[in-house]
Amino acid sequence: MFELFTKGTSLPDAYHNALLALHENHDDVPCPDYNTRQKEATITFVADSPLAEPMISKLFIGDPRSLEQYRQEMLDGILDFEVDNGNWEYTYHRRMETQIPWLMGELQRNPDSRRGVILIRGEHDLTSESPACLQHLQFLIRGGALHCKVLFRSNDATKASFMNAFALIMLQKRIADTLDVQVGSYTHRANSFHVYERDYDMFDGYVRRIKSGGELAYFYTDGWDELMEDAKPEIAKMVEELKNRG
Image 1 (tube, rainbow, N blue to C red):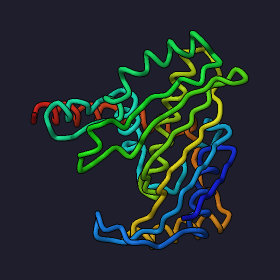
Image 2 (cartoon, helix red, strand yellow; image 1 turned 60 degrees about the horizontal axis):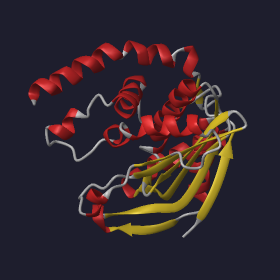
Image 3 (tube, rainbow, N blue to C red; image 1 turned 90 degrees about the vertical axis):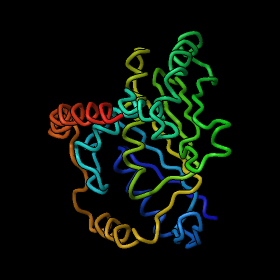
C-alpha cells in the first residue's frame, strides 16, 4: 500500500498536491462494502499556513451554502438533534463538544502539553454500520502557534477531504483565537485516501485542471465569506424544518 506525503503553503496547495500524489501512486482495489472498486493510498498532506489566501479550492463538489452548513455542523452542532431523533448514529460535533473545554483547560495549564487530544472513535463504532471516519485530533502549541493534526481511517479524496479539512481548520482557528495564539500548520492524515470507481472521471478531470496550471482557488475573504454569510438564513430555515419534522 502506498504511503504518500505532500504539503503546500495554503489548504488548496496541499489538497491539490494530495490529489496529484494519489493519481500517480495508488492501488486499484476492490471495495466490497460498497460493491465497487477504488483507487487508494495512505496519505498525509500538510498546509503550512492553512488560512493563507486563496483558501477555497475550485476542485470540490460543494458551494458556499454547503460549505457553510458543514462548518456549522462541525463547529456548532446544528444537526446534533438528528442523533437524538434516531436518524443519525453520531455527529462529529456531538462527539467533540464535551472534550473541547477540557482541551482548552489542558493547553492553558501547560502550553507545551502533548495531551491535547480529542477522541472521535468510540466503542460504539465497533458494531456500527457507519463507524466514524475521523478518528482523532491533536492540538499542540509550539512557537506561539496552535498546530492541528488529524487522523481519518477513511477519507473520500474528491467528495469529502476538502470540506473536512476546511471545517477542521475553522475549528483550529476558533480554539487558537480563544487561547490567544496564532494558527499554526494543519496536518491531515488519511489511512485510506480513496476515490470510488463512479468518480474516476471526475478525479481525472481534477488532475487535468491542476496540471494545466490555471487558477484553482478562490479568496475566502473576498467573496466566499460573504456568500457563506448570505446562506445562513436558508440554512437556519432548513434546520427548523428538520426539527419540526421530528
